[in-house]
Length: 88
Image (tube, rainbow, N blue to C red; front, side):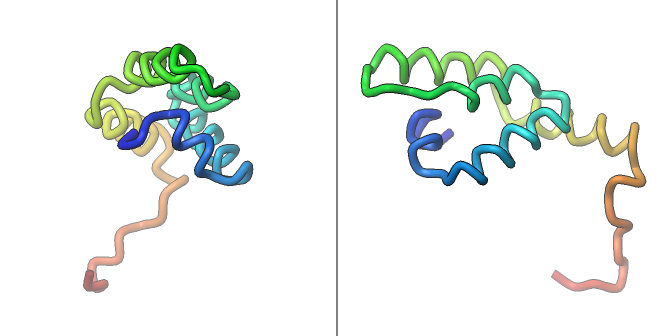
């Protein structure tokens, strides 16, 4: 979100945008996925509208963390087990 939605859409490949859409949908953030399905033009109004749509769908990082926790609790087998012997 640093550069805004339009910047992200313009900077990412189609495969990366599709992966972001799939990821938002996977974690139940469908309103956020709809934002990245838009195709912005050069108007400032569209950029502001897309940023507002994203901020409404994901007002802060806690929303993302919560969506992750919900998915983890509901589908723990979708995630790799923690390797307690691994070092960062």
